Amino acid sequence: MIRILIADDHRIVRSGLRQILATESDLEVLGEASQGSEVMSFLRQNRVDILVSDLSMPGISGLDLIRRVLAEAPGIRIIVLSMHNEPQLVSRALRAGAVGYVTKDSDPAVLIAALRKVSAGGRYIDPVLVDAMVFGGADDAPPHEILSDREYEVLLCLCAGLSLNDIGTKLHISAKTVATHKARLMQKLSIDNNAELMRYGIQYGLTQERMG
Image 1 (cartoon, rainbow, N blue to C red):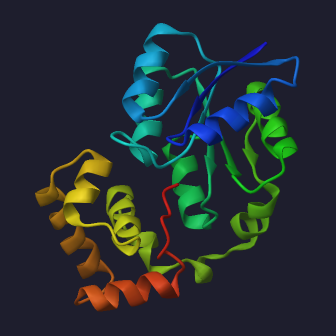
Image 2: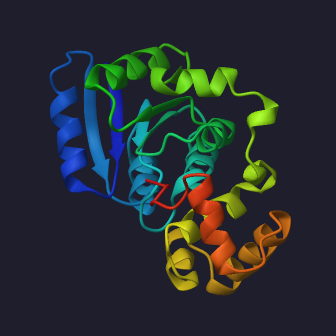
């Protein structure tokens, strides 16, 4: 039996996933979490094989959550289930330690296949992302490839219209630290003001909430 923890801050998503996975005899949903701290608490008390996690939840989230989970439970396998399909974020999630990445608009059979493959020790990337991941060469890499993971997360939040305080709350860091990351990423991308930042976000498709 493959033991699964579902982490997503939307109850309807968690409920839907639980119902889908309940139809498979080899998959068992042990629990649900709506935020990063709940994920960490659950993993300390239960043996889980696979964490299926959104990238956007209150408190600990995104790439930081992947790293923290693996630091405390190195044997767990992590599949990201996200609305976001930008190869840049997929690549960063995999580098952080995730072994699977599935988009939320995929057929449920894709997630089920990912769970079984990952449980067997493999890796799984949603087929709709494979071409971009495999055939996207260095010449196609966006300028924000040079950003650190934290700077990249701040960039996504800024492009989504979040304030410095909101980003600080979301990423579990101070607004002052967010401001520092913002200044650094703008310097790296040769962006001088917020208007240019939003134009950059539009150009590269980052203007929606992209950590979900």
